[in-house]
Length: 403
Image (cartoon, rainbow, N blue to C red; front, side, top):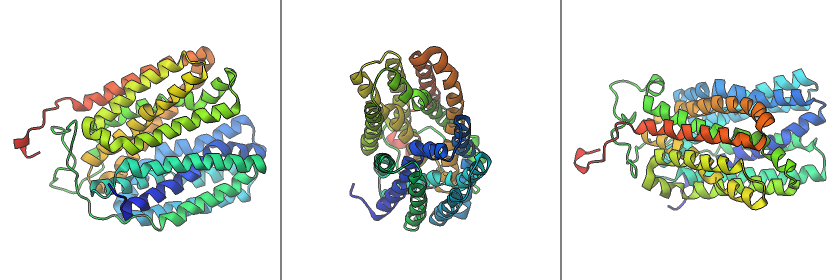
């Protein structure tokens, strides 16, 4: 499929958003340390966006659905976040920094769900493929990570503030050219059919409501299953670099391991549309769970460079396949007027699972070290099983059924 204007616009939005993440996630703690915060204070500040993401993602998505003009909502969220972040230029001390972080995160957490909603609508109208749109976010994240690392090395951690100021305002500027909503059109279901699943795309006798999502047990199974699989990544996210350093790998090698995972993710996003035609969205999630089990089992025994390169290549399946599977499922079964709320639910449920797994990873790694990945393998397997529950009552697709 040739790129269309809406798909290029949406890809630009994802790139701008993930440039910010590519600077913030690895380097914001350095800025906090430069401002004099201690380790516990830094951890608390970094946890604030995660907590607010759990609480606010669904309401922010609902607001986007109710307003209707998602470009305007995206710009509003980005603008308020950019203005709030300027407060870092005027504050010192833990409490003040915590307040500014919370103010910035309030609406910053709404950007990814709204961008996902735009991309889903584009895919539903046949104007692009979600995976090929989303991959530009991963490309931008990797580029920002590398570029910011070079700048920090040549200057100081104080430069992180100015890079983030630029990134936040870039988000606001790019949101002005975000795609318009367009007319929602349901795409036909292909591959591993979800015919027989009560689709929320079916005509309702009333306006669709948030409760139509929260009471649909099949959708909840998909969300919970995928969230468990994603949360199984908590141990490597938190302690991967520490484990690799303890095994004697140089910082440059550790950086290479993370880069390999992102590159693998980009490739899967590019090929995901073709894969899901054959196995469907739930099939993608189950693949994510199964290969997550393999990835974490191997991680519990790995100690050589080639082991870790192979394990990081599996990020394409454990993370990206699961992520894409959820998006495709939402595209297939959720009406356009509830897509923002659905994406908010995805973020909320995943955030709850990830926060819980992150808290558990501390004592898990302390007691078991790398063997703690066995627990992550179990979590990934449970996630695949829960997602499979959504196929209960599945009936083979019949050509004569009209479905």
